[in-house]
Amino acid sequence: MGSLSIWHWIVVIAVVLLLFGRGKISDLMGDVANGIKAFKKGMQDDEKAPEKPAEPVKTIDHNATPGPTAARTDVGSKAV
Image (cartoon, rainbow, N blue to C red; front, side, top):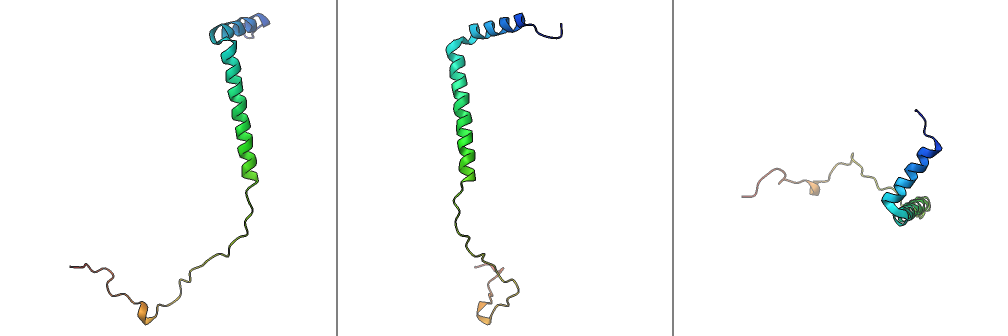
């Protein structure tokens, strides 16, 4: 009772073929194959990323003191 015999599998396959037909199953398998091919192509595209020369990293010096011309007096005030 726990395992399926060959006759059970034959009946299951016959029912599936009757319900879906041979054409729909082959179309479905073709769509699955196209999906797998697209996935593999996408994975290869990720591995072949163009190697650009790295630009130098731009940094901001946070310890710099602003000069006298950089002082702002309108910070936090409202224009009336």
